[in-house]
Image 1 (cartoon, each protein chain N blue to C red):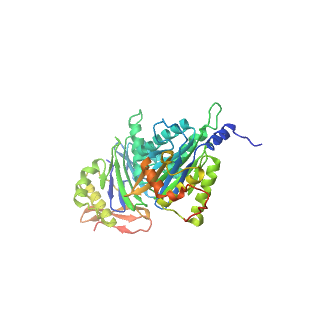
Image 2: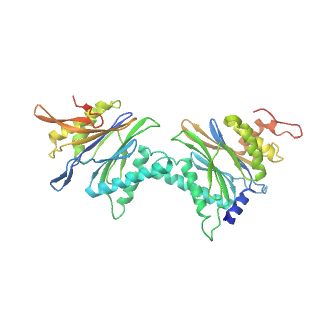
Image 3: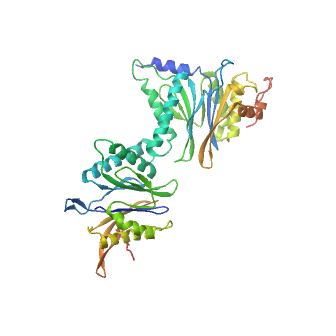
Length: 219
Length: 245
């Protein structure tokens, strides 16, 4: 039921996830940030079994920070993704596998390129231009297939994410009240919060940059 | 009270009697140069001083041969392990740190003999686009160099002097000049003549089409280099030959 989307441009990545923590039919929390900032240029968004999400993502986050300290340079997106995959794969074949689905996106300041990795709970890993997990994928992939271009700008990518969210709100049985969106680029990580708006009786979302209140809307 | 670790001192002393290995960072790459131990004419020729560890890292060893084999094997495993877990080539310093740490362990407990090996490790790091040259000793120290040599103390002294003059005032050499400097060291440390190609080893690390590439010279190729620099090996060595560079 959780929403997780990633879109990669040439020199940025957009990650979006919902904010709901649910147990059975009850919303336990509606402002949960489901992303972890692994280091200065890498973000991981995590969904899945409630307890697993926390323990796994904290473990990954701490270890990637440790590697950064040990070798005196932050890990690249690819290194973060492959190490995480390895850890998940090892756990999968133990008595205590983690039931988590991940998107890892980031920017490499050396090559000036961005990359996005999709990892599922069976530890399959793919470097992809755009990605989604779970029910969201049924609604988002068709739109992203149609609209994705290699030369997408940051604003266009955010707008595409907004269109996916709008489509979800329109068609998905389980409505979600809010989302967090992050853009990772050369300058670092920018965080946006969603703001529902009503247009012609239909709900849509604007995204507000948390740092400077700049609003990005679909139109 | 100073506590001396005799075993380590012995190991270092053993290294100080080994044959010379020289490492040098150049503007367009890095090189390793080694002199082989004198050996029987009946022995098959094989690499024994310079080894490739990964596609971007190589090492030159001095000391106990069986010890160095173990360390080279372990280094190769470590490099491949890193590739498997991170999908990226291991950083040179990370590997050196591992080797040094591993050697250091054997200086800490009774009943174990330290590794009688010093190594020069040369590598290329993608993250910084830089060449690296490290040295490790049997105690587990490691340090980074622009150019250095290890082996017999007298030879090391001569080698370092020549390298110091070649690299004075922050000068850098390209690989061809580097090889010439190495051969110059060779010409000073023993009564070698131009026919000594089978007594030395030479390897370079360069970036070719964005890929780090290690080339270990074959004996005919070394011969070519010797011929190119034959002026260094004058028969009558009495004339003063402080030449160019």
